[in-house]
Length: 251
Image (cartoon, rainbow, N blue to C red):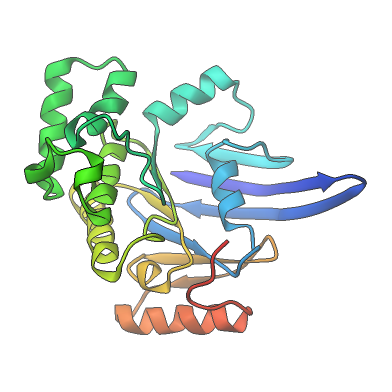
């Protein structure tokens, strides 16, 4: 579903060149829930921004559903982002002047979908994620966990090929964090959603099928969840400590 081949990215400051990503290659299969972890400065967020094409990469290829999106024009990229990608951000990105229901409808409005179809889909997602009771409320009136569940539901409105999540639990307490992870798991189970999540949170990552670990801009290793979630979280914590980070390391 998502494939990255030998992706590289560097930044320049004066005469100095600072490589951030160095020939990163990875794949995410349809219906997988995959996380990327690594110490601060390992390139996690840069990787996500390159995959979404919000920032340009220096070399390499990015494939989404077997289509190469590496060299698309801005107009072509806008269509891909609105129709084939869903986004969940750390700070929710909900519009304060719109209700929960209206925020959810935005992707369909941008895609010029029929109103009846759009509203029915939004209502179904509200039921799926347990946010029916807050549909008419505004972002300022709901909790952080409810905001993020709304953001997950919104990301699914156009049935994207992949959801790209950037530190989606970063600003949440443990209860709200679990509610958001449950929303991802439900999207995976009920809708076959493919989720690619950047996180520094070992608890959130422990619910994933697989975790890709970055170090100094390269893929250091890959951890598969095979036993209990708790055992997987301990394995993730040990790996991050070995790399010189810790469980609340941020980038």
